[in-house]
Image 1 (cartoon, rainbow over the protein chains, first blue to last red):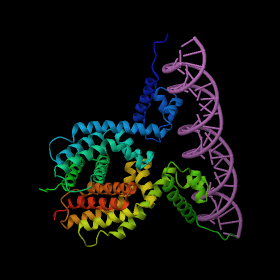
Image 2 (image 1 turned 30 degrees about the horizontal axis):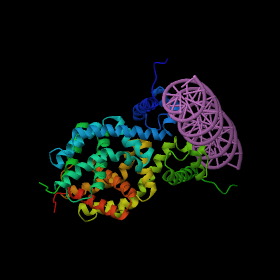
Image 3 (image 1 turned 90 degrees about the vertical axis):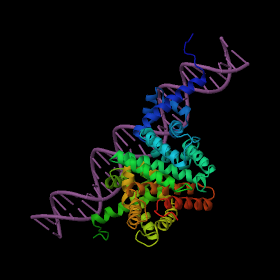
Image 4 (image 1 turned 180 degrees about the horizontal axis):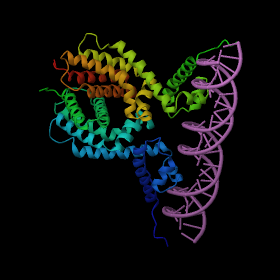
Length: 203
Length: 203
DNA sequence: TGAAGTAACATACAATATGTATGAAACTTA
DNA sequence: TAAGTTTCATACATATTGTATGTTACTTCA
């Protein structure tokens, strides 16, 4: 009589989790193209057969890895700058940007989310995965600000896209900068100015 | 006596041009990973040996393809919105954005510059190639606006990065949108608002 | 002009990667 | 517990990159 009697559901959950875990680490470090399936499954402690059974494709695994990273980041952001909290739009966005820049120090976010994501999955699918996470957060904040009459009358969806793009670029620019401290201060100030330009009262 | 006596310089120039030409077409259509070197050299009418003689690497070829596309786009932008022309910052930027969005209808720009570029070459090298072209254009416009006292006191370099990121995202968002016409109008209005927030006088 | 030397190119080869097919093991159900 | 299904592992076929070797085109110098 075996002690290790796992249900099928548990088995799949375990291997998928192991693969996604390995993917987060390895894709972040070497990039999507830089890590082969063999390395991947070895790190996960399984065989290539399991990978291709659970995920149809290497890109499918990558998609789930991306989603996992996104979900983590969204959690962190939601904690740092809740959409429903007090404070005006500029204040909330500033806190969100700070949290985002912190999150982007993690190579997982940089490489998987910002660099390889669009190329591996295509832009549309990439954004579709971000949609329910970070993009949704931004839209929530903007919607609330619009309801409070803080925000100028602008379409939320495309505005959220452009703001997210600003945050993405800010993270990469900051990472590549020589002097992190001043670069970060400059970035935050610029973003503040940009966001302030979206509010109704300039002050 | 041969009629076809080309100098070595002419030979290399011809094969490099043929490869870059083929790269622009094929990379734009199928993405970097989607086109093999064999397809590439066949389209260029040469052999793989020539490719690896001229470019050390497939990524090296891609880098030159990217630079060529960038140069083209920069030319188009400079023609549409010269940095030294009259008009205030908002007007110049609006024209530039319009021209940029037009340019980004070309799949070469989308796929090669915006999607695959960062992933294939790495973010730093990617931006380094854009630097002398489009990024330089934006910086020129901003510098002039700052000199004219139009622009709020902000660091030019990171601001240019963020504006370029806005333009990039705008292009991709527009491309993916269902209703191109309204999406474009919305995007332009948002960018206008954002840029206006950077000017000294709000109006 | 022609012969040695160099650069450009082509072909053949080695190594590695992805995805599939086949078979075994674990689990489920009747 | 036995049949059936799901999960996983190994072996295989295919394709792709980069290199090594040899050949052709050009350059240079006597």
